[in-house]
Amino acid sequence: MTGSPTVLRREWFADQLLRPVMIMAATVATGVGIFTQDVHFRPLTTGLFFLVALFAVVSFLPWDRIPRRAQTLLASGYAVSSAVLLPLAPHTFAPMFAYLAAVVAGIKLASRTTAIGIAILDAVCCAVAVAVIGAVTPAADGWPWWLALSVGLPVLLGIARRDRRDALFNAERAASEARRAAASESREAALLERTRIARELHDVLGHSLTGIALQLDMADALGTKGRDAEAGDAVRRARSLAVDGIGRMRQAVHELREDALPLEKTLAALCAGEAVPFEVEGSAGPLGGGVAHTLVRAAQEALTNAAKYAPGAGRAMELVFSPETVTLVVTNGPAGGRPAPDTGGGMGLVGMRERATALGGSARAGPAPDGGWTVEVRLPRAE
Image 1 (cartoon, one colour):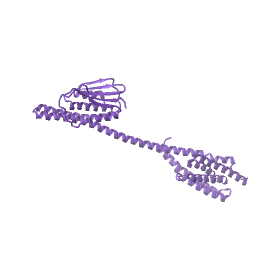
Image 2 (spheres, rainbow, N blue to C red):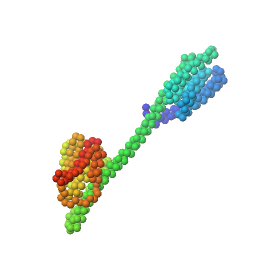
Image 3 (cartoon, rainbow, N blue to C red):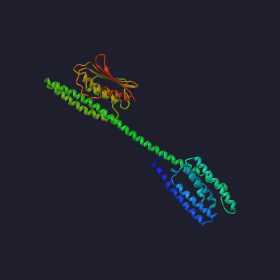
Image 4 (tube, one colour):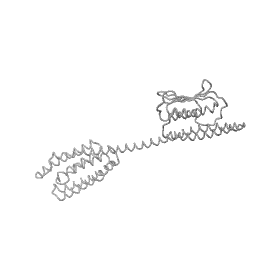
């Protein structure tokens, strides 16, 4: 059972147009038959017909706002009046209303017990009325009392109809809630992706700008000492870092979209560009989303900090794969010169820890036994 718009439109057409038109046509035909054919006790039959027709019209209206007790009284009145009308005009369409009353009880009443009780009342009243009319007019050709008991059976059709309508409504409501939930998840995912892209670009820019600032500081220092050629080299390296930063920004955006960063190759290229030894231990394999990006940004931050705070010191990088985790270790020796001034580049260790924690891992940094510095980021291979 599905709550598709096509099925719902078909149900609406049947309930709101087709069924009322057919019943109204039958009502008109019954009225014509009552006034043109022989019926029992014409004044009583005519009055009952108008009463039954009124109940039939009321049955088209929505009963949701009617109190439960009033619904029961309406369904009972429809059943009793139509049951009594059946033997009074047996050769017209009047018997149809006794069956319709049972159907209406099944459709309109929320309580199945009440609907079945009214159907039984309909059948019993019809059987009694048939028996009474048969006794009063024994020569008349009427219904047998046992056949009159069948008028209550259509209540099962009414109950099935109500169950189908409720199922369609619940399915449509569930589908609507699912659509709203999917839209909400999509919006949340978009916000998370925007935040992620912003952080990646922040780190790339921080790394590049820090390197540029270091080279420009060096060029300024060399220029004041009259070493113009070396100062020019530093300026050219700063320009190269700027161009490289633009390329890395584009690469970061591409990798965020494709989510397919080759970790070992990227780190190897990063180390080769800065003449840093790089080693891989263990077997590489698939990584969870965001793991490779986080390790690359951590490597860039660690190398930049090493060059910034320990200029001239040797640096090294190691990537270790285990069955459950992947670990990045960046080390540098003791400072060989005066540390560069703090330019406020990347997010530093705080940013590393936040990223690692978000992925279920850890990040730490501290002094090494030889007087240098060690940065270690450990992440699970799958989120």
